[in-house]
Amino acid sequence: MKPHYEDTVTQPLTSDELIHARVSDLVGRACRRQIWFLFLDGEDVQLPLIIPVADPPVLPDDATARLADTIAQGVEHLDARSVILVLERYAGPQFSSADKAWARALGEGFAGAGLPVRATLVSHSRGVRWFAADDFRWDASGEVEKGAGTREAPGTRDAAELPQTRKIAREHPTADGRGPR
Image (cartoon, rainbow, N blue to C red; front, side):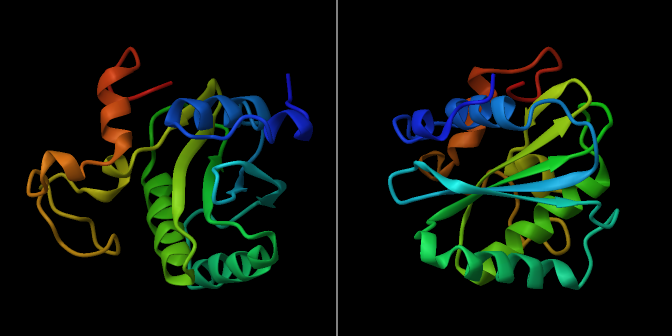
């Protein structure tokens, strides 16, 4: 059941589980290829604006950073403090190289625009799946993939610096052990 806006303002999205549940309720299973942008205020309450962008290119291009910048500027008047990205595509739950490229490009674009990405999720043919930064940031050799920021080998950060998404993935694995459903 889709939540009414009045209900969303009483439930701040203060955890990864709450974000996953909200995206599952709002977007649910994929039925077309598009990208959704949801916004949170300083109290982690979802703002009353959701932006779907239908039929994006298969891979991000030079316009992706401009898109992120334009969206960030457009929501300044709402006092948005972070954005939730949802990559919707009608395919299975496995992350594709295109999913990874979009997550990296949009993350960098919004970081450059000064609006941090709070979460990235993938809406697929069977539901919604959390897309942790570790799933799209690191390449097979353990280094940051090209275009994903500074090069840093995994395991070089203190445990206290680990993002909440890693903790969630460990505590709530899917059947394949890769993270929350």
